[in-house]
Image (tube, rainbow, N blue to C red; front, side):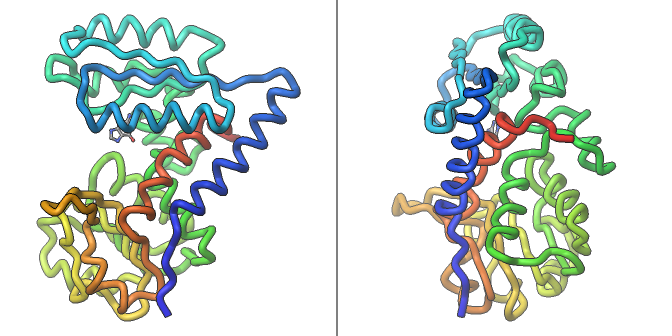
Length: 279
Ligand code: GUN
């Protein structure tokens, strides 16, 4: 029997745990506040930002929204971030990506104080993850680890294959699976004999950004498949990077799209806002 990994349910569990924790913090006189910055009016970004604000409200985190015009200059954005870095009442700063073309994304991410970088995108946090030091971890791959753990899937000693090598998902995903004592292989669109490699996986995480790219030929019987992709098809329905209908029957567990990895990203952002860097 294939286990369907329910990201909606697991993300709700996490949000409820955080809500309780925040209530306790408030009773002791501490509050959390996230600053969310959006530049321009990309419709997808607007939806993400709205959902982040909603999650903050649910959990009891104060949020400050900065909605800046499309023609905002790099210097104006840097100035805003400098101010937020210095404010003691703000403990998380998030700049929604992508940014308009006149603004250098790397420069902006570097300007966020690493101890407020709840997205885990600053090179200091990326570096800390890679050498096993405490720091903020990118939310989507952190969410994948939670999906596995809370579904009772062991990582230690398993053959883990990550398909995709982005800075936001593939690379931190590999580092996290390694931290959980998985045996990790990273492959990508230019990998030779890709199917041979993905077929070795006990746990296959797919983040290649191509709709229904992974079919049954890529998957070993009994594998766990985690689909990070999300695409809108011509018929308006959503699909992932995995061809769910052909792959699911071969797996021991799989995430659906929607309702798998998607809801976990915001839950883990909220986790980062509440818990901070940890010890
Ligand atoms: N744009 C798409 N995904 C993300 C994300 O996780 N964080 C930010 N800041 N921007 C994004």
